[in-house]
Image (cartoon, rainbow, N blue to C red):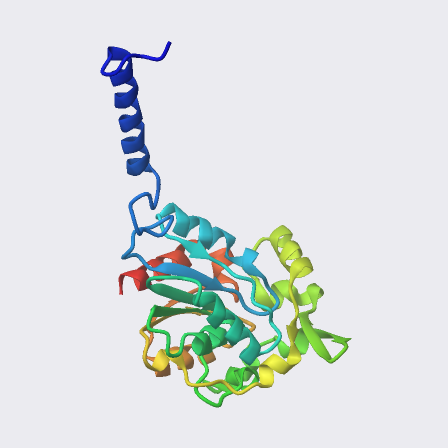
Length: 273
């Protein structure tokens, strides 16, 4: 027999239901109306953009650290087919998000965010992690010459290519991946990264860049002082002309792998403006 109206048992059930709903609202992220799952409405969403010869897993440790701070993070897979196509892909991805965004680009991913963020009022900050930050009309393949010391890069001398119908893909020679990309990363980790690298179309390095987002959006730049893929002199030059808030650390080309704490700190600083 069901409990009578206003019986002690019915009142107890009602009390327990209300208490459980209140507890859920207090502890579940985004439980309040209009909140994005995982963070408050005024906190930027972080979008991490990987570079060539890598995939979204290169952001794993940074992603964990940002999520531990209560931030919502996405690390989409960039097609790596060409600067125009990759920028359009990221622009379409950003269109699915709501609220403020901080875009983070590593290496070639820096060129992608430079183009994809242009004209997007929701992008509040750009973070370059040893990334290319081209000016209008520049091509990624020539940016290592900025700063006057292209010989600091070992990248071109250690590329291997594979032809496919319609084009050519480039990889870093696995035998030299650690020297070029990750001198301060453990050998077992390097072996995994070298085996799993995603190729980039060679055509991507020759496509002219568009109007740079860094001309109108605040930017931050992490210079990898021991980079052998992009010369540190070129990174400093790109950061300076973009007017970026700049930090420099002793790192190889993959600071998000070997120095995830410092990278996370810079991204968090960008979320605060």
